[in-house]
Image (cartoon, rainbow, N blue to C red; front, side, top):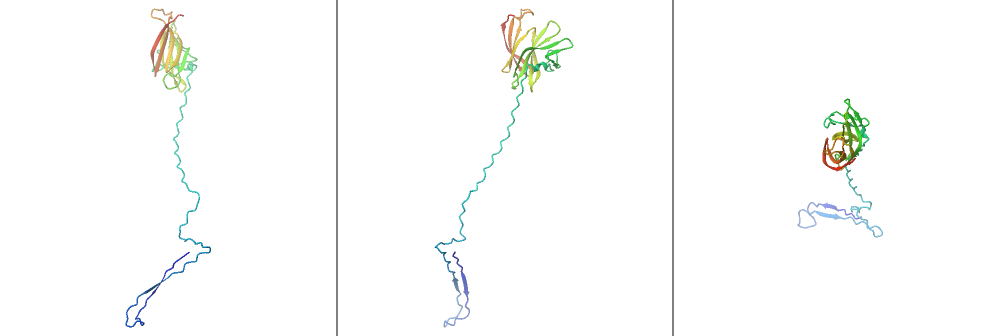
Length: 238
């Protein structure tokens, strides 16, 4: 390594110069610089690099910043549980009637027991076989419709169709359609949120004992209101 050390020696000469005839005055300042000799190169001709030189960066693994973590997605709500469909068997213990939609003249709930109810006044109510299960109000839960007969103690047998809403898998009475005296229901079907009822009735000039018409009626349920959409008649012979 080569190092240069400047040494400044100031020599101030004061007084008169005796070696110069006739000259007098101040003597200029002399400055001398001493330079240290260069250091010998090491054997083999190699030259040691200067200590102040920047050393090259050592090879090694490159530090990489970790990739930002992806934000966690919001938890998705669990799909709603499917509501069990009503069954025709459940209706044997269901209620009939409500203040908003009386069952005939009964505004109180009439509790069925094994599909039957008998009132103190001699009125009897009995479920009949024709029954259907399906979505009637668009909530994707299977509701129910079933034929019911009301007997008042005489010869009358008043047929009707009762509608139940599916309330978390349990039947909740909605409304009733009165079909008349001695007009038996032969079948009920539910499709496209509509109920199709096939029942027997009579023409205007027939007696009460006669049944000469097979009627197919389509109903739509909305809340406690049932609306007849259409009906078609065909001749019927017992």
